[in-house]
Length: 115
Length: 106
Image (cartoon, rainbow over all chains, first blue to last red; front, side, top):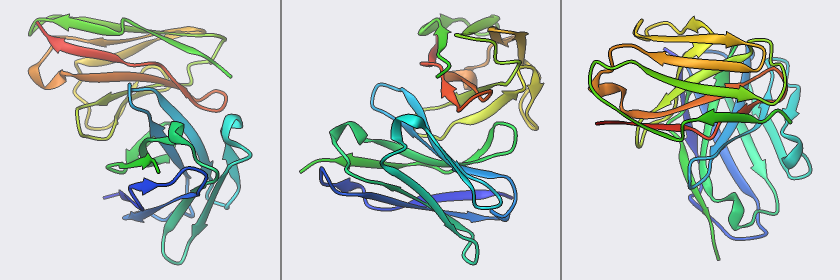
């Protein structure tokens, strides 16, 4: 069974970088697309970006200057880095697999940006 | 970006009732639409993709329809376990989500 698990710090200071890891079991990240999505307090959902089976990336234009998604195929993990965070980046962050739609999700990790 | 206008924002219905949730896209998304269910404290679960295809393992009381810019999710014979927030998402362009519909029992 495909399983995804997010990990990373739950608290980040403003202006610093947010770094999260998504560990995937039961399926190779060299197939399909793998993405990051976040849910803000108040329920708004935002797609952040994907990394493809080949390692190419696609990002939400609103984040393009701050975001990087990379991967380590030997560990079957992919990563999110979001730079220069502000309190508006406080959210629950999810990783997910995209085949057609987002069919497998991690359980989510809550990240608070605060000094 | 493509804006998804989802309605209603909240909905109260009785057990056994039929429920409809709508999503209106700001431009034609050619049926590149998914519906998700999210229960409190859980991650979203895919219900419907390509506007009307039922994801494996999802009960047949859930169905999706629509084309162009207008789409809907129907839940027949509402069950207690259907209490959740429902989101639509388009993936024709870079993905965007509706604001969600919170479904409660009356």
